[in-house]
Image (tube, rainbow, N blue to C red; front, top):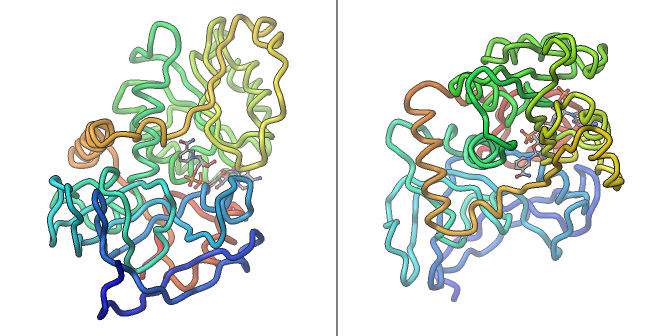
Length: 334
Ligand code: NDP
């Protein structure tokens, strides 16, 4: 159903896969929410590297595609059967399907959570997809025997949006996080946010440095979102029975792996998780969000927003993200 007096509202979409220039600003009429849906008016939308994969078609979706998977704002309308949200509520989400780069959208209510009063909209928009990802990586994507305070873990791209949240979360759990990043300044940023050690993987051999830092013991887990350039090499950083978790492809997709390698590297485990399995139900989404909200409210995790762009400048935001010019989180402002 389309409301007769609903105004057209700006939305960034992709008509054909391509570079940042493929992002176009369209004016769309946004309808009323159906059963199980809400309409939200965004105060801010989050920028994520996954948006790049969707723009280029590395992750394929039907076209035209409204981009963006994270946002925060105010609930404008509530569909039948939605009981956890009402009109006027402040809310934030990480969503599947995409469509957050817009002023307002209709979307499934199950992935939308009430935003605690102490958390502002920009923070809410920047932290949901990235923070829930760190939540499942550190609480649910675990090596044999789990993680204990004092354990070493490696986290690639530690000065990025997900990365700086991970540095702080790891410190709060008592983990010794070794972060990698692409410049000395970014390494310093990771250290300032709780990383125990930082390695500039463009100028140093991270495998050799990890061996040195861990006294030859190796790590229980490597969390890798860089993909092609780092994942397979990271196996050499693990101790026997260690876990290699690949959750992204910023440098390109990981090539096929010969299973025999896992035996040769010491009976290691490999996993390739996605947030969207973890937030498939309202209950799991809310439980994970409550954990994230508690981390942010306690001050243990601060959401650092280093880049702000007008919604219409989404293409520039993509250029900066892909050129590795950003640190921490970025938001788009409708
Ligand atoms: P980031 O802010 O971390 O940006 C990506 C970073 O990757 C860059 O800043 C850069 O840091 C590093 N990088 C390394 N090689 C390249 C390259 N060739 N091109 C571009 N960047 C490169 O992004 P996000 O915080 O949004 O996301 C981090 C990762 O987590 C992404 O890969 C994303 O897809 C993944 N992700 C996965 C989820 C899942 O559930 N599977 C959910 C959420 C995010 P540097 O210069 O320091 O190397």
